[in-house]
Image (tube, rainbow, N blue to C red; front, side):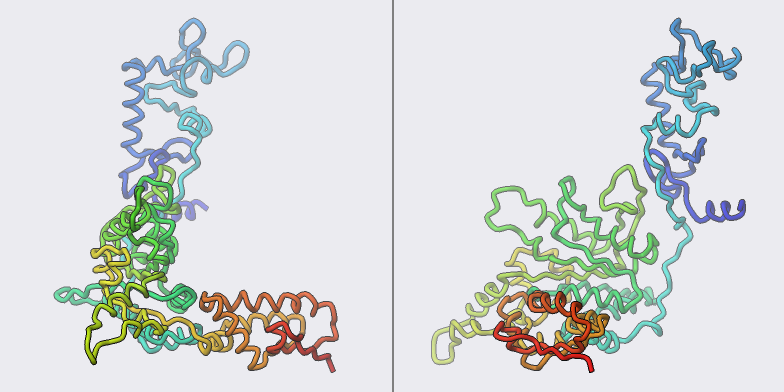
Length: 488
């Protein structure tokens, strides 16, 4: 048992009870009764505060009786600490509990008395020692090649071949960069920007990548970020989530990937009459993270405070992927393309691109700047690629092909009731047509299916004789019902 405690102490650092800094940050700790540790800085500050409060006369901190005399105690050589009525005079008078020595803490103080004097703060979280930790070596033989990463993504994500190719190459090159032992040629990282309409699979693509690759990956939401000093998450919170995904292992987190979703919500506000604390200022704050800097992040919390220890994380080797829908960016692209029209027989028509569905493929950095992203931010995201909007054929494939397709999910639910669920080809087309009208991409599929599957999921378990349920186009359009097949 004693050996286990010793190993546990060797693995974890001591954390200051007051400032919450670990031993590697604050220096050697002074151990006190009850397992409480204090760094030398906080201990010195407590001494300075005591001197200021008493003017150097520490007897004022000691408990006194009504006549101003020190009570009897073993420490001052006058006998027992108990008064005539049997009470303990250590906790009476105008002093602090247990203040029987000029150093403030008596050896007879209980841990509860120490915590009461310090404000009854909870014990700090343990922090693993990282002084001798080294970044794990990257074995490129175990890292799948870009075409293999794209194939694995294709099992869950339908279409978006260009996006899958771009993200596969970027992730593969990221780890080749980390495995590069040639210090003469330093490979720069290529942060990415994904642009695509809602429901096109941006977030799902990154979540699937995180599940397939054994690498620390954190997904953060840009809408919650605010400028330092305002209500909301600090900019460093995106790194805190990565540190948590790496089990608070700093060396492993420094080789991870961070995906910042809804990045278009940080665009500079047009004609804003009040201070914008969640727009351009957040872009400026993210610059140091994208470029690479050593920042202190809290362990186990989103914001810095005195209750949690801090760890230093270097973002130089962290790959950043940003994604956003960028609404109305199409109009900016059309405006730029139409400016190239000229007069004459060979001139382009002004409405040439009005019927272009995938207008985002013509995007350039100038369009993103006009949308409201600052040039310094765009420059730190050199790889820009777009996702195509969902059409009818892609929505039908989303229903059928992925491993976790929504149709397969409902088939599994009814299979647990020993009922087989089937769909006709016309039913697939009807579902895709209804979802296409909602203009929210693949997200509309679930809401459409939920509407007509509600009655089926409610009624089917009532009759144990039902064996099959076939969904038809008439049932989807509300002009008929499903085809029910009985057992046997």
